[in-house]
Length: 428
Image (cartoon, rainbow, N blue to C red):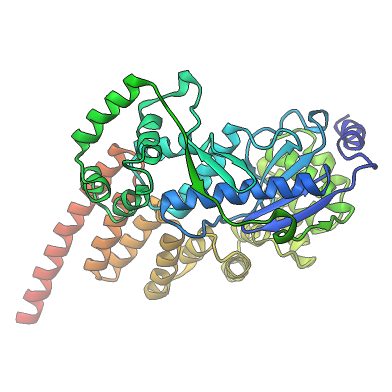
């Protein structure tokens, strides 16, 4: 019945009369049934959003581990009922919208979260949450960007109001990047405020109280990228199979029961990868391994197929080979070097891979802890202390930070004992 539903559903979603076009820019790929103009406008909105958020973060070229696939349908009738959130599919984050609606504030917030998490070290939760809320209502019209449109009254939290004040008020606007830079380097909020705005936490909080009480939230204009959507984006007609693959990926990301039928209607490595991920989801590991092997035999360029195959592989040599291939295909992905490090016995080689993983994803506590343990085993105690410091900065909660700090103090005791033992040995 699922297969029958999918066969009936796809003609509605993918009308034969639609002319699908595609274009790519930066981390974005737009697949559009609504015509050239709709595709170009959607890409311009995405790139201007990335540019504006980058200015606030002090990052000139925000990147993502996986590209963002945006499917633009002609009307809401074509949208699958479960395709609402921005989620990781087979080899990309994927989302669907229509040519007249664009991305909603919730989707912009999700996109901002991806960029912030993958381009900055851990930030104080109130700063990060406020930034996401603020940029959820960014408005783009051609080369005009307006920041600060108020969120709904019920969502006007103190975190949102703080970042609205610091980014929209002329007395503060344009200096958020200094605050972010200080926080990324390990400064506390008070130091960050003083360096960015020459005010203490108490002074900012007092002004924030008055700002919220006044309830007058305006907007500010951000200097846009000089994009000519008609000239700068290179658009092409999509291959007939491209919309079908994108639809199957959309159903996979949405956890739709119809994803399996959609992939069964395809062929080649795309189908094998999608079905392999569905098999993993159902805990059918042997079937998943077979499907990923089929995709690899077809010389897929998707790093995830090699990565998932490696995790299912019982032969360490084969697993190492698949992980190395995943690193080559997606060098921005932190998980393959981390997993490869766990298979290494040489402490120096393992350290090299773990350092690469922490560089790619400095928010991942597990990477830092593995590096700290490795450096301790190698008797490189200073490096181990630095790794524990990275783990502490990456901690998501005060409780986790306290636990890591206690482990770090224990390590200092172990180091002192080791050094005393070494002095005794040399004296003897």
